[in-house]
Image (cartoon, rainbow, N blue to C red; front, side, top):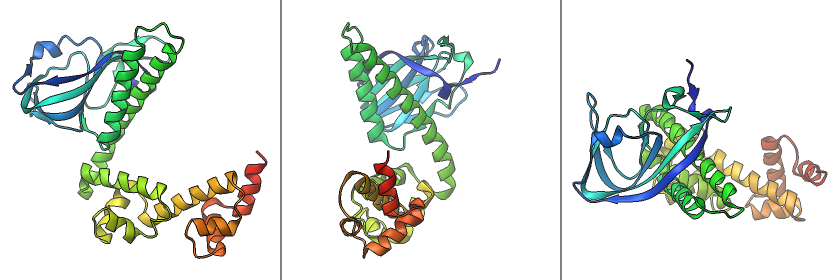
Length: 286
């Protein structure tokens, strides 16, 4: 029987919580063998060791993620600094609305590292809060809230799979999870501060890297140069101003720190395939 890729399924949250365990606490193999649905664990702090017969041990720390399913043969020991996790038990629903059993689902390897642990933690905490606020509620918003929790969970699962694929591709380049977190932060800073991000050198210096090293890891992770990302951020902000303000082309160019309106218009047309005035007219006609 052909398995369904889990990315084509819809999660249904059964239960979720935050849990803290003391140093030396163990979860025996027979506990894991009692799992009847899927289970996602995100390590928020501390360390633990997971063992499975015939496999090398897994060492969990903040940013580690476990995807558990019935039949997984583990035991776990919490290390000296304790362990805090967020977990979600869930089922997976197929396109026909039926609950799938584990044997019907094709899912990624059960252990991996999250590239953006801060985002992952925020989202899974939101899932827990939505579930506890609305799980037994008769409020008219409850179905919407629980559906939101399910979609947030699907986003995390997709992010988890993407992280595994990206880390495999980045290994030969010597790019670590820390590098990825720095570049994610740099991308965010560039987008929200396109005027301050005047060059790749300025961005590299802000994040504590030499220009050459920063450009190498930036391109390895994003597939583009920092200079390209800066241009794209400026053009995105220009599009917002063209569509939502009465500023003229010279004023927009000045606000985005372009040398002059001519250079701005030339770069905009190169990126968007049309002049800023044409773009503004098109948006007004919608």
